Length: 268
Ligand code: SAM
Image (cartoon, rainbow, N blue to C red; front, side, top):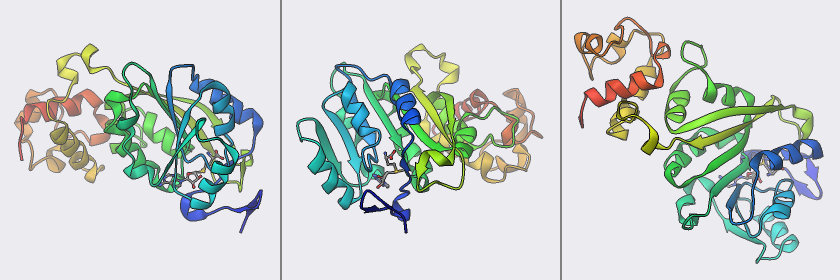
C-alpha cells in the first residue's frame, strides 16, 4: 500500500494523486477559470489541483467521497474559500450549482474506475454547463474523440459527441502521479453543443429513442445494421434515410444515428 503525506491511497476510489507541478499548471491554465465563474472539482484528493484553482477562483466547490481526505481538506482550506460536498459524484446534482449567468465549469482528475458512468451522469447537465476539463485514461479519451470508421468509435463516442465538442489537449505519463497508474492519461476538454445553433436534422427529437438506437446498434458492433436494428427499423427504411443496411454501427456518423432515431418518432 502506498502512503502519500500520511494518506494511504485507496484503490477502490481510483486514487492516483498528481505530483507533477508542470502538469498541474498546464491543467489549471487549460481550465481558464476567472472571477464570476462557478467551478466544481470532482475528487480533489490531496488538493493538487484545488490549491492552484483557488488562486484563480474563490469560492471553489469540490465533491469528494473519501472521508479521510475530506477531513484533511477541511483543516487546510477555510469554508468560505472551499465548499466541500461530501459524497458520491455519481449522485451529485451539478445543476443545483448553476447560478444565473455565471459560467459553470467542471474539472477533475477523475477516478478511472467510474469514468464512463460519471461521464454519462454529466451528460444530463450539459445544458447548464459551460465547459469541462478532465483527466482520464488516454484510451478512454481516444474513444471519446474517435472518428467514425475507426475501431475505437463506439457508443461512448456517439453519445458524448452528440452533446459535446471534444478535444484531447495533452497526454500525461504515469510518472506524473503517485502512485503511478499502469497506463497513460490524457486531458480532454468538453464544451456542450448549443442546440439553439444546430440544424433540426442534427437534433434528436427524443433523447431516449436516440440512446436506444445507439445502444442497440453497438450491442453487436461487428454485425450489419440491418440485423442489429431489425427490431427498430427495416432495411428499406434505412435505405430511404440514405444509410447502407449492410454497414456496421462504427461506419455511421453521429447525425446518421440522429436521422434513424428521428424517423422512429416516440416509439417503444
Ligand atoms: N484531484 C486529486 C489529484 O489530482 O491528485 C485526486 C485525483 S484521484 C485520481 C481521484 C479522486 O476522486 C480521489 O480523491 C478519490 O477519493 C475521489 N473519488 C473517487 N470516487 C469518487 C466518487 N464516486 N465521488 C467523488 N469523488 C470520488
